[in-house]
Length: 259
Ligand code: SAH
Image (cartoon, rainbow, N blue to C red; front, side):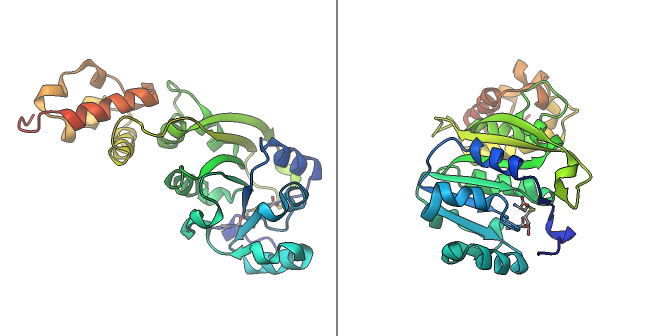
């Protein structure tokens, strides 16, 4: 067995029915499926018969990869001992990659940022994460928990909250409840504004989330746009399209006028 290591976020799922249900949540017959953090292979054993040669695993813990190579010898060429956050996903497929995993909860936000960086190849993600984070990502504007990842992920993916999972089906049990969510790439290829600037503006707006956008984004706003009524709002009230609109305003403002 693999000894669970806290610093790697290792909580091994022990319930086979839940493992099957997670794997069945993936919607298609994807040619390439990448599992993040397979651990002892509880999801892998349901993925392998479905996806066969299209399946690859990335796991940071060598004790796990050794264990997996013994138990899934047919997969040994596609079990990668690596840090997902530092991996270039282009090697796993050109535009049709699905990602699945019971993510290490301590780095789930960084995993989503890495997925966003590869949004042109990642078509679908099915993952188990901390319930609170799942709710935050799936929530529409207006809620106190709506935040940076909600906006950035909702810009590129349709998100569904699939089901909740209690603490007691893990070894060791985590301190929090878990949930499975599904992200499906939407049809957006071009937001209508510079995506890097959009990203920076979303971050800046939420870092000052109690302020109106006029105050939170003041350093970027010139006199010709600063009085626009959209800046009376707060970050948590805005849909993706409103952030796109603000980014366009900022891109097109008259930079010779300083507020
Ligand atoms: N899928 C298994 C294990 C989930 S625990 C199960 O459901 O039981 C999370 C797993 O992610 C652990 O095996 C941990 O070693 C692995 N992990 C943690 N950080 C990682 C990283 N940066 N890249 C790849 N795997 C990572």
